[in-house]
Length: 365
Image (cartoon, rainbow, N blue to C red):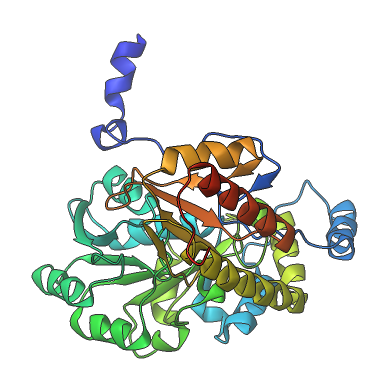
């Protein structure tokens, strides 16, 4: 069969998508993917390595990762029955949309936000509905409620804290939305350890609220590809029916459990990163950016007319940040995640040099 006859057999919703893509660029200081800059210490890795050496590789992992679910439940202060574990929070989003969305179901998402939401919705045949952030890149709670009232059957997806803006919804705002919305509400809280309201206490009062989380950010395990969802246990039991069996491997299962047993290390590093973020925000606020946005995450969004020049200058200094100017409302914006104290100092120095060379006055200088 000829290729030109095969390609049209792929669903048009998929063929019309723009693929999610990120070019691989090597730099000494990598501040472009919102990773935790601290790797795990050798003693933790050795514990996992010993397990992997002894474990039979020819046997399937646990059908239900009971011990890991208990560890996550303890970490989140819920019961194991409230948890589904998956291959990254992106898989959890896919599972939720497969379970909650039919063809042409409206799906409300705010913009700008994580691009994977619309990628999945469009690919699965849903109907995206957009609510824009306000002029300060904060959530417009009234506009969200209005969209929910107009489409009561819709699935609502919100990231709080939001990527790439760093903004989040307060408890009162979330409860206002949940008091109005009659459909399911997927709340992506990938960055919640860094700030914003932890919405887990809401899941019993609002069983239509399901939270997704990840090990990729605060827990410093982006390479593990492990995420989970939290929801009302009866709802979770139904969602679990569409999740693929054996969706996480034995290495990820064991590693995630060991990391949670050593969570004091996470707490220490996250506390330090929050302090670094606040310091960096204060520093950026004195530079001649067009805008610097406060953040509840491990990154800061800045806007400058010299975005291209700054990006190239930082790259020439071995510092890689993320150009997010293609997002709606984010013209001339760069997203810069928080590194180690040494990396942040190098970033500060490079930014000062850049603005000095461009002869743009720095506030307070």
